[in-house]
Length: 268
Image 1 (spheres, rainbow, N blue to C red):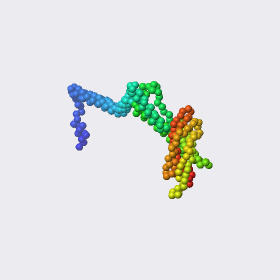
Image 2 (cartoon, one colour):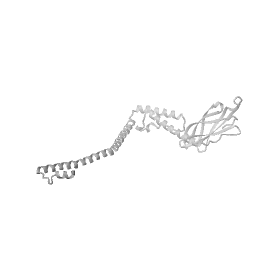
Image 3 (tube, one colour):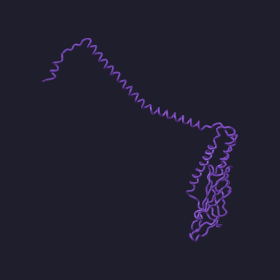
Image 4 (cartoon, rainbow, N blue to C red):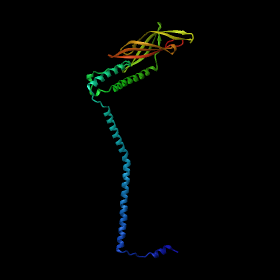
């Protein structure tokens, strides 16, 4: 059986629609096209909105974050801004400032710090004694850090100790004042003695400890020294204090130097 031919015979050769049926068909076609026409722009607009949100969100979050940070900084500045204080408080603060500086200078690290005259203080200069102490300590820490770095740079190749015919031994040490590394030569007369039990020479005394500046212009005045015998008599640690004057400025300074004795009595 040929289904195609049978189907063609069942379909009328000519189909006639009434005016009502034609109008109904036109309406349905129009509705179908209109729906298709409007659904595409809707989908495109929806996708566009999604893409825009994805792209804009990080920037928006960044702006919000920066704004929050800015507000935090402003708040922080407001929290740490100076508060007006009374004349009695200023007087009390100033006395505490002087005590803080005096205590710092007693450490004799090689910097000169003093409190400015009270009448030179601006309103914003008046901070709590605790903050003032932190500021002074920060200055000293920075100075000592630089000193360690400068001395470490020259200590990689130290000069040997030299003992002259009078039995005086001289050895160099370094100290630091602002922007300048200064070499100080320390001389002392040591006494050693053979220890039969340990079978080696040991220190038994030290005398006439002196020091002088070497190299750059300036002046060094030793004011005191203190010795400590350690390592079972094999090492002397000498703590020396003095005043170093350079370019018209004077700095109180303290430093230590070590002298060692080997088993044969050689000092280095």
